[in-house]
Image (cartoon, rainbow, N blue to C red; front, side, top):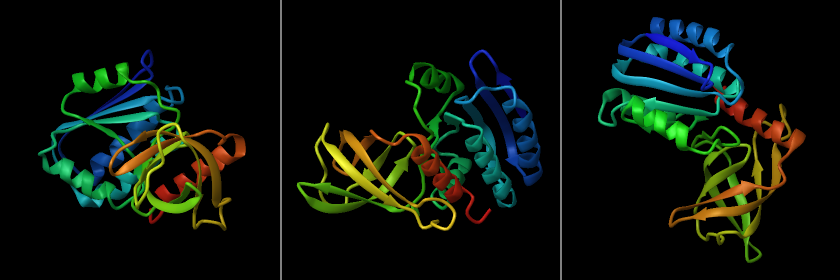
Length: 229
């Protein structure tokens, strides 16, 4: 295992190999905390798992704790280097489908990961995804529709199509209601603009989510990531 921080790039590098045990994850968590302390908010992470065989399930709770630590310290993007035909990739995908967490980028090499981060525009919020996130309500031609959240950040979201899609550049007001109303304000009504559509989804940018509302949405998303920890 190797963890290092590149201060010039504001980037964290993680290298794992072999079988990842719970003890390895606990050691990784400690090393990451030391390195992140030297980085600025909106840092990126490149996690190289290309030489890993698989991860022991007993370490998954520590793995989730590590993800939440990065989120709370304002990570911007996480790139995982792993072959898409490896057992570890299948394990991670299976775990990700069951929990709320950030949506990483997958590449097959460190070089590809570096290029993706160096050439991409900086996002204005970490993307979260989880099948248990609430449905979105939206209106098209004065008719109400609902769709699942495919991924969401404090700057926008992608919504799966249940029936009808709005048009690109259309202004759409959406409503998202969380169930954790006893902890945070749980209903958000947000003005958005459609930036992308496809056969199965559309994406919007938030236009009026600022200040306390933005902070409260992030708190709700963080609360979702901590369920069952």
